[in-house]
Length: 636
Image (cartoon, rainbow, N blue to C red):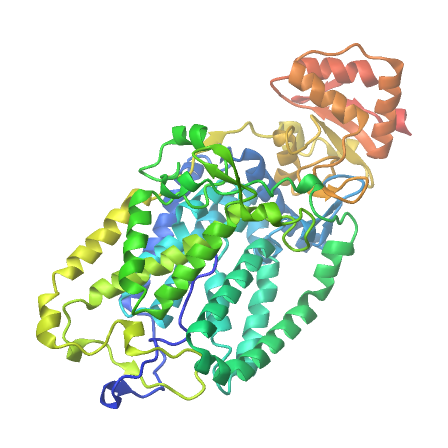
């Protein structure tokens, strides 16, 4: 989950009476039963979300984003291939032959696929995809729980609820449909905690080094989520500085020193990959036409239940549209959020910062035009003032800024449960808090913690608020309990491919051309041929972002005449009248692709595709369960 808000200390530091303050030095905590229970519950929930895949893990893909699912299976195979052959993982020629793909300029997930390469070699990319997807959801919830329980709330139950939302929020589960890079957020709580600890006196070097290492690793998982985290941290720091100017001035030097160390280390470690991303082969600048800038969040989506929750209904997508469901909190959670902010914002500094995040990033997510219930209005949104080619944000989707809102809501859930947990407890029984230390980055007044001195009889009379608070949180989040992700069956690759029957036809330096040629629209099964055979043969086309003729990013390889002809034939389910020019272009394209063999397996359009390719390059041979055109003599 993007960017939780935390206090950097175990408890918000207070100006409490010295008699109630404990030593600033705290013993190192060991995992308690509650910690183990929380982690176990998150793991079980991760397995449950991926349950439909495990019914036939080798034959099912996401029914919502099957192409993305296959792309990430291919990425796991890429990590294994790079390790096995000791090749540069930042680039590959196994897809989009002969030009290749700049992997660091795509969602390559190298920080995951490379360390897990041995397991991918052992289990295969399909198993690793499903195994990692559930594990990433659980790991994000786990680090969120650690952050909340160690740095913000005392109640482990409060941390459990908040961590569960950070890992399994509706928007995150929606991205789990084929986009594991957006559920791989387990480093983000650690990054935020380390940012907010940069002001600790005497630890600027250590905190800076740890932060720099975490940031570098996150670059190889998801740069977009790192950018969202950085933007949210900036808002958090500014909001804190406005409310605590004296403490900010006291910690500014230490904070900036630590930030300089972190930036220096991250730059040193990631300089070459970042240079390669923007200047290496097949790099690009922005996306053609700024295609994502109009993807703003629909205002009605905030109070709508997401499709993949127990209260959700797939039919609602026809009303609001098939946008990413990054919020989709449902009206009970929106109502609880408003009430919780009203009750907590005056006495809780973290709640005030969460409120700032919610407002800022909700407004920023609206897009160039305000959308309401699926209708784009004439009211201009903030992104109408943002140029499509603005660096850093040129590829951002406005709707994804609401992932920060979801994180702030997760933190607010933990604060709300924790506030309810404290109701009815006499002052003497409440957790004692450490005394304020000079130069600490965060200092709060008694009002900020909600733990100010109150007479015990009054606290006792308010004991009824505890079950009311628990019930309110439960009623808001239970409708958002995730369903198992929808999955669909997909045909296995031909035996000719999986058995290695292709090997005599593909010498070193040549490619296998599958029909249809893989793209972001067509050729999902043929893209998997490469993934499920360990990428042992290169293929043309593919599913990726690469440069067009002017260097702008486009999806897939620029169509050549033959690939365009193949796609149009599939769409019309009819073979056009072929000319000598078509045949000449086919041979020219095969030479460009360095093809040695063209292969057509079982396909719904198999008959027309076989007729088309036969009309272009001659009759095929039936080999095993595929049609084969050996074109080595034809292309030279």
